[in-house]
Length: 445
Image 1 (cartoon, rainbow, N blue to C red):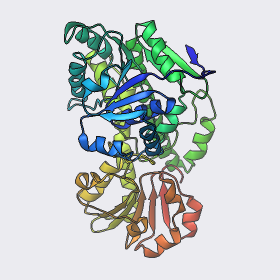
Image 2 (cartoon, rainbow, N blue to C red):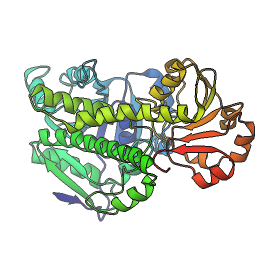
Image 3 (cartoon, one colour):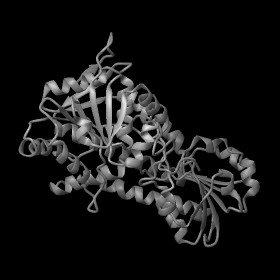
Image 4 (cartoon, rainbow, N blue to C red):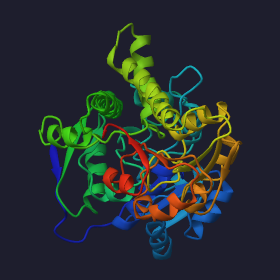
């Protein structure tokens, strides 16, 4: 391991191409532009490119829009639809295309293969291909062979540089990483990618250099372990509920142990998002394909599915027969400070409520309109207080900080029955009980 130490003087920016204008791609491109590099971000979605060229985002991510606007106005960040033009003359080409789960649960690399086919005909010797996409172990070596056997038959240095960005805090994480992983076989290429990061780092950052396969495994192992940690705290919360212990107090103390750590010890409705579910399934699929029995990841996946049922049961226990009842829902995205609905725990929980005949009114400050097609029986409103009108229960599913500042006396006065299920533990139980609510949460009772 080496450290990236902030430069002591001015450095020359590098010409970079970032392929894929999704969550990771935009953060990476705008972040590198802020470092002082010349960045071209490539995507085939013309509508998305039009938004980005005007400094706007196709989704919400905290602090990202200003970063993009600054990059565009400085001239260091431009957007292009043609990958052949995008990679021309660039020292490093970062791939950030999506690798979602296939129907079989393994990573779907079709988008990656499509762009690799194009790049193999357009990249030149001396350029570095950097894979930031989360890819199965062995992918980098497969790409190396493809480049040497197809296209213009050029040997290209391939680097794995996995991202560890938290949605809702991605901009902060880009500029304040806990570590940077650079995997490859060429020391020259590794040093060049390290230099790209070094130019913009404001503080010393540990850099772990590995081979490609190890870097690929590090990404999966990280996300699987985080899923395990969240799964554990959710199960502990259920146990604490049963014996009358506040799980938050337990979590605070065990998290003070550096062997455990305080992060990802917040119980809730279950984990979701674009990374943990698909990476867990690929991890399990890889093991199964090799005949390796993994018990913990499979158990964590099942535990997470049960957590959705657990939150649903809390609503049912307070309200009783749900048919014809009105449930007000606060929060739809899988976490706060993002518009991402992918694998949000809100989706299966609300579907279960709809199946029982409950009527649902929901509010989220950032959820994309795609939610209307995902949950056709849910009425979305533009004011959180509208969810309380004649409601039999308020269900909190996303930890938006603004929900803590709502006038709960006003909400109480508009409800038919005074029930709250706080699946994110963001409210003060004592306060809600003083307002006369029947209050339930995850592991605080």
